[in-house]
Length: 385
Image 1 (spheres, rainbow, N blue to C red):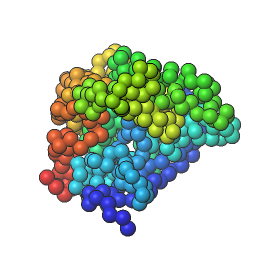
Image 2: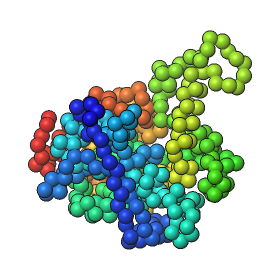
Image 3: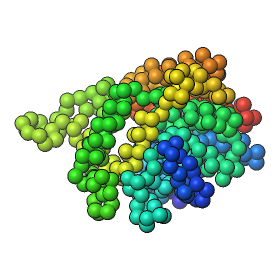
Image 4: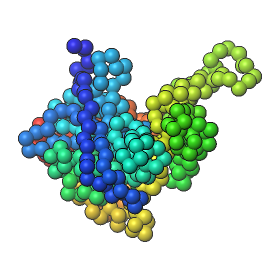
């Protein structure tokens, strides 16, 4: 057996749940049947009261912690916070991490076969919303015998799902952790998403979304979309510290090839992403981001929209996050206070921009672990504080 870090969940195996009952979607269409791929870490207690749901961000998936194989180079995307003795302590919590519908990592999405046509769904796959994801996650909870989550936790787009959980299923969530998120996108964020979508849609290999039929992938568009997105995930300080204006060689080439280290980094990120993510899924995920606005049905009054919520909240933002800045988290916090909800808020000083929610910042970990100790105490679980 390989030697994993002592606080790792070790080797994990994804599971799949098939749902034969149709799922009515916010767009007005119905998904006749679907699969959800998920992972679990830890042990569900006899009372089934210690379950934690992890909601992923735009390019995330179900592999949040541990390793799929002994030679896997990197652990799951949130391994810094999930494992024995970590903030989300798998010695006391049973953690569920699911790949959302419309994804490209096993759950039913554009790359799945449409049973009515026998071909990939492609661009015919229904537009998804945060509400649709939450409904499907609730069905998975039913399948797992979980009536109420001890906490639902997520960052970025995952934080939006957490917020929707408190509104759609308030009786099924005991605590909410919303990290680096927003109650709705700003016009600037929608603009960034549209530039990314147009980069993909204008790629000659996109073929109106039917690229699989042409045995091709719109890699150039995906690469550009990821490059644009990645710039927004990092802070100016982080980029300056990491790359500055460093050149790959000692002399200027006076051309358009890669010369600066930051150019090389962005191209590498774009190339890697274009080989692992589906273009139609990227379009769907960014649209779900754009559409999320629970206050829209309440004349823009967020406090009124939050009325159904019945659990304590932890809201976390990061000082250099300009994609979802602290001002947007404060907007949520103020609305929760106006709605007379219990909320704790912290703005973490971090140089890492939006990506800080993925990292093991000491103060972030301390706040996160402290709140999770509260979750454990509220449920009568062992306290490791």
